[in-house]
Length: 300
Image (cartoon, rainbow, N blue to C red; front, side):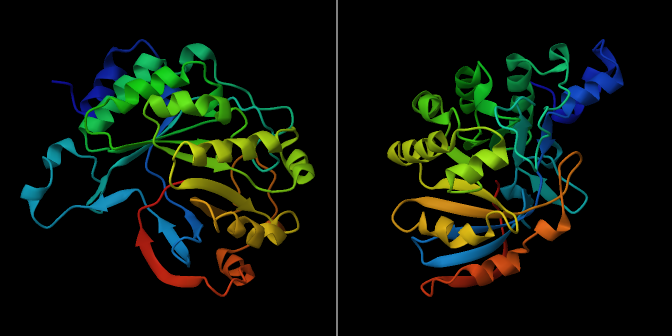
């Protein structure tokens, strides 16, 4: 019987030769549920919905309907955490202005990174504690050499319902058939512009065509929906909001507009921020119905 996630971390700190600071570096690659605001567009149901993202579920009033409380990841508000994000690498093949400086970032030494076996072991402990969805992120997760085998092992964890990935799509197209066979059942593809020249400016790299090919490949392989994440920035791509919505007209694509937010190390200017309320105004399709704000479990 594997120990609970809480006992495992306690054991690891007592028995692992790494210092506590090094352990923090390793553990920082895993984060249990995060929340943020975004907008999801879907032309298939004729609605434009503003959703608040949460990765928690409230326990039912009948304890018999829930798993053993002691096995669950429950916060001080009584919410059960069922969603885990795992950053597989800090490396990325793009250099987006809002995400990474042109020269890149200082990478964590390889010996301090989680190995494939360690990732699967930790993931299994989270799943045994109630997590039923895992999202693989980065950096760019598809540049990890063992990504297909890792997905296969994670998808075989008993109790895991969803294995998702957030990717920039540059190398996704050629790897997606194997990834789907390995159990990857949800993809989010980041794309901030439909104009190749603007893409090259924002990412400091070429590759817009490959990202579009990855979106097409995901649709052809039966991913439904294919989720496209778009960070909206004033003066850069706020004039493309309706063009992105148009992507959803004929195909099973959900576009998720994300507010441009500051974080450590990125180039951020409040003047570039487009609030989600303003994004809604920019959507001029009359057939869209704005759904009243409510809490829904979504992730990006």
